[in-house]
Amino acid sequence: MTLVAGSDTIVLLVVTDVLLVPAALFWLWSMACLPAACSKMDKAWMDIEDRLRSNEYAIGVKQFIDMAKVNAPGIDPSYTEWIFHGEEETLAEAEFSDEEGDDAYSYNDYIDDVDEMLDDIHKGPSRHTSDTPIHPNFDELLDDARKPLYPNCTEFSKLSFIVKLLHIKTVGGWTVKSFDMVIKLLQAAFPHALFPSSYNEARRLQRGLGFSYTKIHVCPNDCVLFWKDHANKDECPKCNASRWASSTTNQQRIPQKVLRYFPLKPRLQRLFMSKKTAQAMRWHVEERVDDPNFMRHPADSRVWKDFDNKHPRFAQDPRNVRLGLASDGFNPFNNMSKPYSIWPVLLVPYNLPPWSCMKDPYLMLSLLIPGPGK
Image (cartoon, rainbow, N blue to C red):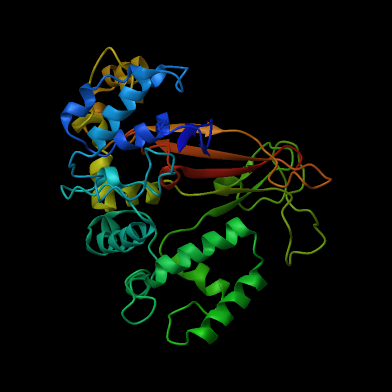
């Protein structure tokens, strides 16, 4: 029986009594923590092309099989997410774990971090010293959010379930009506669970805890924002264009263009409210290896170092946040006959390690800007 490695698969062929070991099998075996002597084995036989007639190849295979029979500790049992063997990494904060040696990070760990963040918010002093507006019933909302989804539930709190459900609604394109129908079905099936009664209640809890955004009306010609000094104006002070799509009545007037602003300060505060991410936000100073011969992180760049030299007071505190900004226009509904464009503005906290700062949990949507003429 012969094993021959194809480009993507392993094919079985009945050719000879010699086992032709594919490179993929050797690679997987070499990852299984065999004794150190294995790493010194001559592997030149794997490059032989005429494998069916080569004595050197047959001898190499035999030595390989003999080595494979040596007692070995096997693969690390904690290595359950094969991120080094093709599997995608889940929401990553495993790098920030304490000295517990956790190598895998599952979605349940993310749920635990939601509850841990709520604990940090509840106990931390920053909530009371910040000038960020606080919901009048914040403590009540906080306690409500931390309740388990149902008695003895260890996987979801009420808030973590709502966050996941709202995420599915967004990704799946659910309507509010379909969301409410799913909620009613869940309530009928699991009457003791703490599901929100509707989409509006789910959003109310989310907004009350500070997960919200602000709508700012924009001049249809992109001259000004109807904000601060222009907040109460009905016409653009530069081009005199109407703020409203229809000005016949003051009731339910629809703005011609709306920008959505996601406040940055509370989101940066939440990074420091979590013990794990608070430590990671100082990584660029406390744990980064400063090697002038390699650029592994933006902190290794000349621009970063020049900025530190020009602003030494800012550079002294590793908690000061360095943000990268990225934006581009795209059509979120490219199947529509009428073109539409929108410009998201994303912020990236470069304080974090390079393997984390570009991951989804830390990409901060700051603005959603409607495209020209939209």
